[in-house]
Length: 389
Image 1 (cartoon, rainbow, N blue to C red):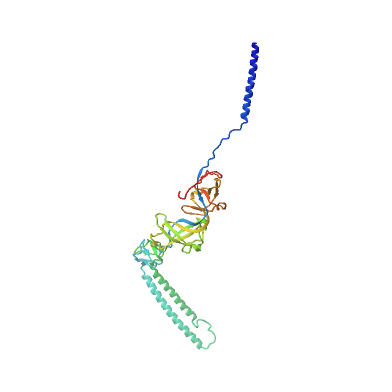
Image 2 (image 1 turned 90 degrees about the horizontal axis):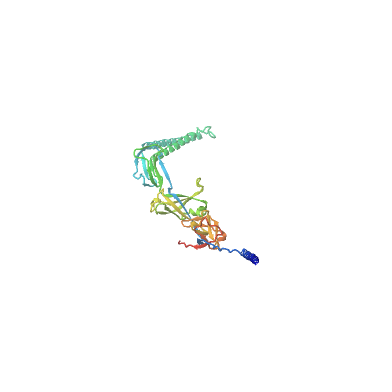
């Protein structure tokens, strides 16, 4: 009975193990065929500041910097030698002189004597010419009275060479007199134009050789500023014949201080600078020392002038142009896109660009401050920023 019971327990144990195995295997098969749960990942759309832009018509504006220079500047030198006899009280640094106003006078007794001698020589030459003309008429009358036919064998008979010599002597005497009078006139040194005295280099009693510098002068009719412009800036300006009408507005403002002036375009240079490879525009202010406030030579100024009006341009903040020269915008699906852009012109607050043709029909949202981590196709949340922000 005991062995039988043991067999019964053994058989029941085996049957139980088999049942447990089958149950476990069924559970494994059930979980193995069950699909894995998918984790829901939330898509993050970063916020970006944008501004809506539309194509418009804008007038280009050109700005550049330069220093004012006088229209004329000269290191005035003497044309004759002599001792300084008199200096004008107006011939001092900082004073203004009118054209032709006397600056100084050299002792000129030798030049006056040379003029007198030249006048005497001219008078004697003219007397000799008159005598020769009479002798020539007398010689011609004698030849006709001789009854000989034809012309004499030598021009000396009718005194033709003698007359030519007398005429040449008169011409030489006239030239000597003109030279002596010019030397006498140049012993008085006058301002060659309306001028500002920059330096006075002589004193009373100084003996000056020919070519000695007596002063440095700046003209007071204009101050000029040379503005070098790139090809792109030239393309924004009207033709030269329009710029040179004298009516095209030009403004100048001092870099240091708040002074400003109105000027005009004086010249358009027709060559490229060998260093900058740019062409220059010359603007100026007339009668600069009479302006309120005066504009002096040597002032560093900002020059601004209007250009042509241009259509189909976007007006965008300078921060919208990335370091790579790209404009980023938000497409209709709130995805980022970009295009390369080169500003047509700029002013203090904006740059102006030509948008791609496919973007020019509808308003577009451009990014105000694109960063390098942005990639095309990224989904974003645009936040419109007003003009006052």
